[in-house]
Image 1: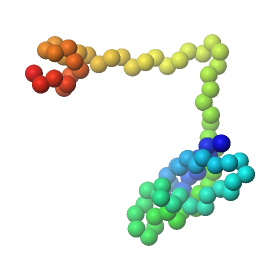
Image 2: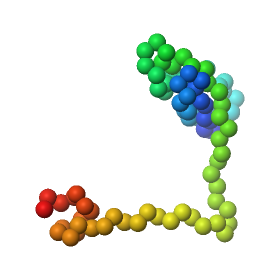
Image 3: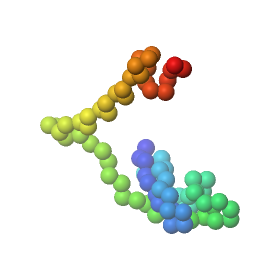
Length: 83
């Protein structure tokens, strides 16, 4: 089932909706709205053109983040020990 992105005209929040290809587009952002009070959930939605991820042969993957330095007292990450 496809995952579609919609942007609310009122609160400017982007929401993701899992829906069948033949299902109608949602009309408002509803419970996902960022606003409070009577303005909440009434903004009109428009579909956002989203880009899918992919991996090309020969492309390199992003490097992993380096591990945090260890504490000299207990050997755990800084702030983990009671020393």
